[in-house]
Length: 121
Length: 108
Image (cartoon, rainbow over all chains, first blue to last red; front, side):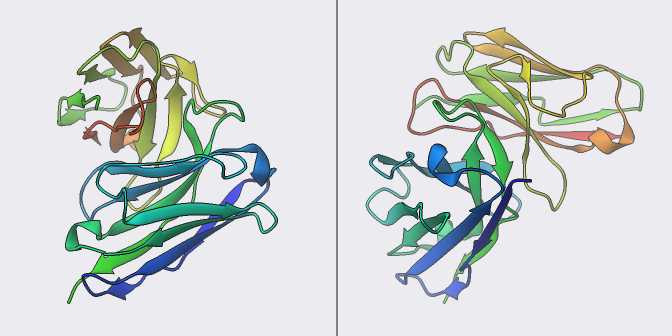
């Protein structure tokens, strides 16, 4: 059974930093592109970032590019999101998600339960 | 950036009825569209990918159709458990892998 468990969410002041983690199990982690998706309270889904199998390529939404950094450690079956210069609009539940297929992103087949980031003074 | 517009915003139907949810793209996404279901307090669940392929374990009541800019998610016979918000997502032109704003389906 695929499991994705996020952690690291917290209350942080504007301008602050935070590092989210996602530990994966139940599948061969290094074979899949991984994503972060967020959801502001009462709002819809927003794709944030992805990282390819070996971490060689990363992509970001315009809203976070230059402030967030995605990374992975395939030896630890872990995905990370380093978040800097946080803003109130970054307040959201952050989900870690796995691609359905190994070769291309066709859909996000498995999701964690999310970790809550609140940016507030 | 491709913008996905879902309609209606809210849909209220009775058990056994047929639900039709729409997703329109601002430019062609070919067949590169997925649908997700999100129940209250839960993570999203992949229902359909590549416009019409059902994900593993998804009931045959759920079907997807369309290509280019216009897509439809159909739930053929509603059950009370289908109450949720449904999102479409495109993978044609990325980043970003944009989502629609969602359709809330209420079962009376």
